[in-house]
Image (tube, rainbow, N blue to C red; front, side, top):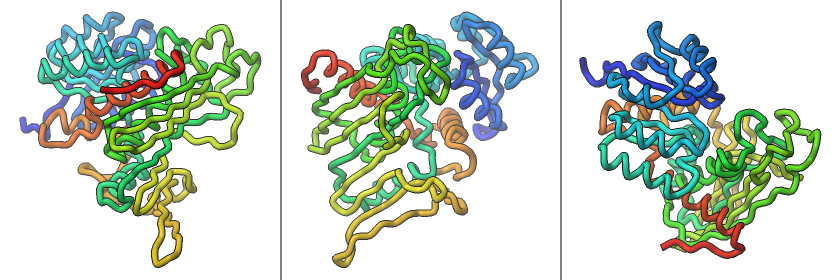
Length: 370
């Protein structure tokens, strides 16, 4: 059987919201994938996942180590709470599996480094789930940057602001299990997009603050229903100032609850010597706006990204961002010559910066990188 025809046997570890809403539907649509094993500490979830997405003989587990013993499984998706990402990924890599781990890579840099070291030691492939890179606006902006149309990008804003959007399911608001709140949950997407489009992964210094100002509100207005203040142990907003080694500046804003109308999630703004770009435009035409100066006049350009189709990357433009990410990941697993958009070496830099913002907020001092 040729590489292109090879059917990949995939196991799922963690059958919660992100598995059901992103990974399993995307994998289930791929003609060369069989979802053959499901694991979760809540057995009912595994049974339902196997029924909805699995092969007729799919197996279910409550202990991920038992799933990893199946030598026929080639790929594992780690979709657990953040605190579990590192050790499960490391175990899966050493069990001979290629691993897609949901974002963030880990709760801190040390745990992320263990994952990267394990991938290098085993020769197995590792990627992190930053599907926002596969949106039309992000892919187009990446091409604009690669083509040098913005010039030297020296200022950027990474934006993940919800007015009232505290996730009230799972363990999102529990510090111990998630490692943080909106910064590590949605701020991570905005920062990843910003670093990726800039192609700049060398931070020099970080200053950060985090706040827990609205979390004690009882019966709060919230998109997902009122939260329990006693369980809400993470920050409700966090902000960072990042200076890169080349002198560029990135401002990172994140919140689940903030008294503001300036909202937007998984967005970035870039300012360069030749032009600028942001993702704050009308979503009906893709959200991306380009700006600059030409013939002594200022201009704004709005690409109509939702009209027609453009093959922004190998594999085409069809499908949701999650499906595009899934397809590129599977192609890379099958064929080393196929590109991998989200490298673990990139994802660990996101983790380093997030951790530094938390540390700076705790100490009141800047955090410097070597």
